[in-house]
Length: 329
Image (cartoon, rainbow, N blue to C red; front, side, top):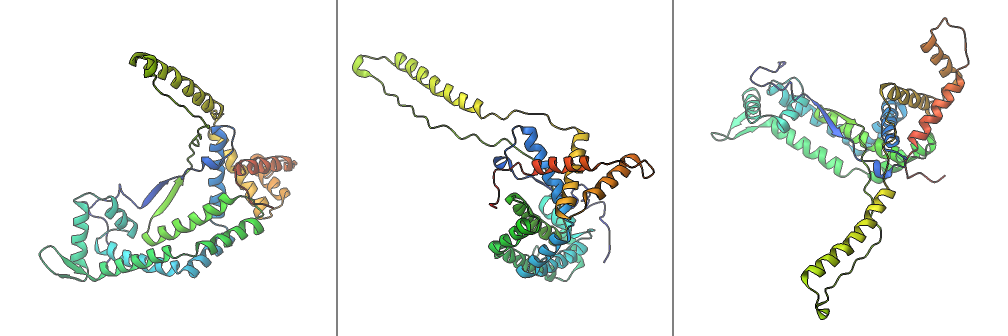
């Protein structure tokens, strides 16, 4: 059955795209300003975008899908959800999944009524139906969840670390973590028919407190009054508070200069050059010729732009390397 969403079950505003918050990486970043850390997050996103289509990454994730059984489980769940979406007269399984999770109180029962009417359902009571397709989807979902739970996380970590450290010759543990997350989100997204996007997001890391102690006792033996004790406590607390504030100011991260639209494009350009040169062995001279043609046109007089390319790659490497943790050589 191929149908369209009807007016009384409108999920256009729900769609099948899910934007996830970028998990907080700022605690592991070493930028001197907030802008430096934000630019690192931008550079990280560009590199991951390039790697998502890299044959080596695709082969690794295909291997993971087969070894974990997730590829088969995801395909089975996707097929079950397709049948339910078809029964609910929705365009995609992603719309169906999002409808169940975010639909209105009216939309969800309407979708279920359509499934009951269009698919192989048996009425058990006035309000309870037995639906073969729904049972199959629940079983497929349980199998998918079981495959996720029993993934060989240690083996997968070794696989991706070998690729990043040996094949790519990069010292960044964060890249391994990001690639593992990409595999999970990609598999989950395929199974449920949804597209997950993650926007760069960085927050200031929490500042640990310094080792301070404060002791206070009243002095009834001296005839101290409540008022005097309170004044003394306030004064003593103010001294400790002053030390805490000073410590916070010493660890304060200044804003720095955030890039505008052109600056963001420069980050994208530089990281793309970094990827092509360092990870794909594209010659600097080739990138320079391509850059010259893009900027000045194919018929312009030749010029040596290799210095520009090298500088851009170095800038990208510094941005991408702004993290506390690195692999040992």
